[in-house]
Picture 1 (tube, helix red, strand yellow):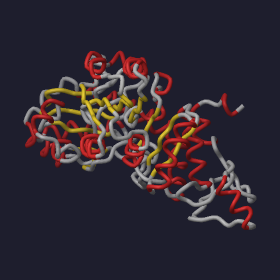
Picture 2 (cartoon, rainbow, N blue to C red):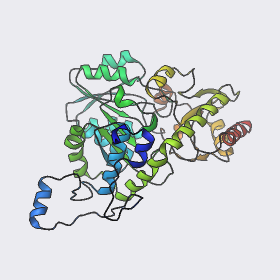
Picture 3 (cartoon, rainbow, N blue to C red):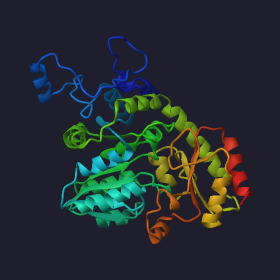
Picture 4 (cartoon, rainbow, N blue to C red):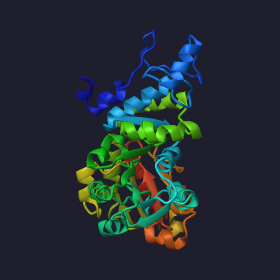
Length: 393
């Protein structure tokens, strides 16, 4: 039975829709519209669509539907809506739910664009946002109010890799009737247990591990059918944030190897973190899978492995960080993550450069911090590349 399949099988087969030709690889329905046999059929389609009936690509498409069904089966969600990018997913999940006068509680450690949506976009339209230290349950509890409509956080924060206790925060949020929305990118769909732990809505940037090869933008929001089709879909289809059929096809292909890639990347990340932990050029090594990580017990409880990303803090600050980055031969300098290629980023001057210096300091985004997204290259080659670059400082 399909519901009994394990994750790796679902990543390959769930949600498959074959045309009359019986193709092996999923078909790309590269069309923006659909033809009706009669005016009466068109009228009926606009009144109510069935699972294999489509109106317009902004509303739905067979290739996109396959991706939505497959990722929902993988995540254990009732439904999913695929979006044009990860930030379209974050913005859609929040904006479709909230109205002027609503209150949101959010962790402070967020990707820069997520922070922009909360600080600039939502507040512009009358939503009140309270930021807390995501690892401090007392702050979450103190911030909750009877009018709190939603809480939002990254299950593993970018780039300092703080891990939020999903189960405990969800319990506090549900006590006041709030919806729990989590950005689960760093946990990945492979290691995710967010819904099981109490999250109501899970958001992914499919651009990251799901594609995994730096080809396409994409995002996805997962949750109950009522939320996805009743709250999110009307907002997304009218504001234009839907995923394209071609990108959905790329994401379907990415899902087939996701489990294999992510497990290999996580194993390499752990080995690299263990090998670098006592390096004399580093002030600290941050990796959730290390026993010394402050939230390691939470990691074990809610995501099994430490993920595919580690961060290192060089003692020489930005100058040392730049020398290190420029000396690398295998790891490439870019601002993506979750790719098959190992990618290094200097958050203070790129992804989080817009943050004021005092906020960077508060979040631990120091001038020497480098985020390393571990790829699928040979682990020993990566270690030699990193230690060789450190030796040149």
